[in-house]
Image (cartoon, rainbow, N blue to C red; front, side, top):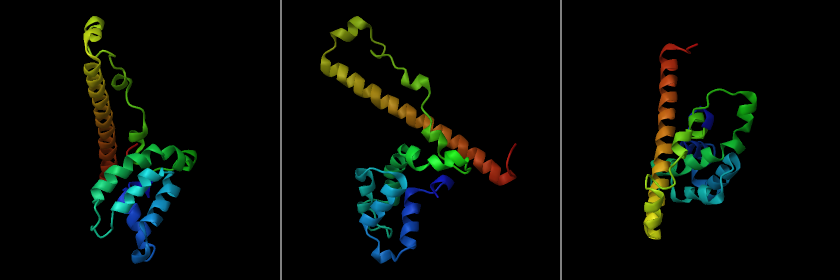
Length: 165
């Protein structure tokens, strides 16, 4: 289901639907996530704050936002069979590709001369480093979203007019 575009919440709802909903516990959902996606327990445990009826402290959207990156980070472990068989329908490959080199290549002094950098207080240098790391993460996220949007546009076109060769 993940390869076909399912969200983490839709996967959880499917698990619940295949059981008696009143009997499915957060521990069982957590177990499904750890087994299916090789998620670490700290990420899988997020389901304890979610309820399929909307009464949990975490909304569907929040669970998707929190779980999707963790699931994609472990794709190498749970999606190896799709790569071997060449299975089609994977929507997320752009998110797994390394960011462009331009995003990762950063001036270690953020445009400040070596002399100027050395004159800054350590706390100021730490602030620059933190801002640089945040900026790098935002650029990576933007690049990933742009790649995903491009992929979705191609998929919509295929659905509207058929596969393009």
